[in-house]
Image 1 (cartoon, helix red, strand yellow):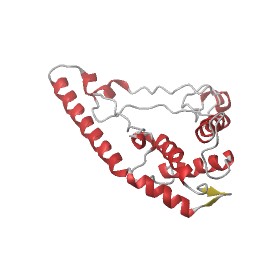
Image 2 (cartoon, rainbow, N blue to C red):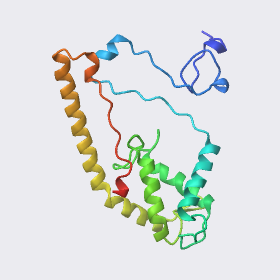
Image 3 (cartoon, rainbow, N blue to C red):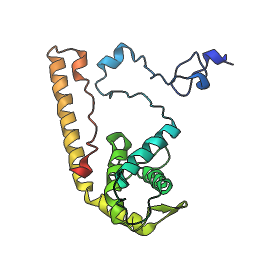
Image 4 (tube, rainbow, N blue to C red):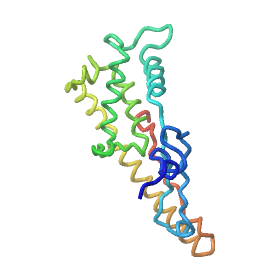
Length: 203
C-alpha cells in the first residue's frame, strides 16, 4: 500500500495532511477515547517539543556569558572564557541525563528537570576548576572527576525528594480512587505527576 503525501503521517507532530518540511510544530492531541478516562494507570501524556538549534545556541551563549562574564565586570573564571568550549561542555553534560541509546545516571533524569540541574551545577563549579570539562572532543578526566564528585554530594537530597514526590503521588492516586468510588467522577483519579525540583542544587 502506497500512501499519498497528504495521507502520510508527519514524523514531527504525528498528524497527517502535510509533509515534515511543512510542519508548523503544532502539538499532537491524541484521541484516547472514553476508555482512557477510566484507565487509572495512565499518566498525563506530554507533547513533543520542537526546538531550533541556532536559537538554542543563542540562548546558551546569552546565559553562560552573563553567568561567567557579567556586563561591566571582570570574568569570574580563573582561565580565559571561551563560549565554544562552554557549549562543548554543555553537550557533554547532556549525556549524563541519557537519551534513546544511553542510560542516564541514577540521580539524573531529563523528565525531572536534570538539564536545569546540570546547568546550575556547571555555573557554580566551573569557576573552581582549572580548565573546562572537554577540549576538542576529548574529556578532561581530572575536571570531570571533580564535577561528578560535586554531583555525588547532592544525590542523597535528589533521591529523598524523589521518594517524597513518589509517596505524594501514590497518596493522590489512592485518594482519587476513593473519591471516584464515592461518586467523585472518572476524572478525579487522574493526577498529573509533579516534576522533580530542578533547583535542588541551589537549595
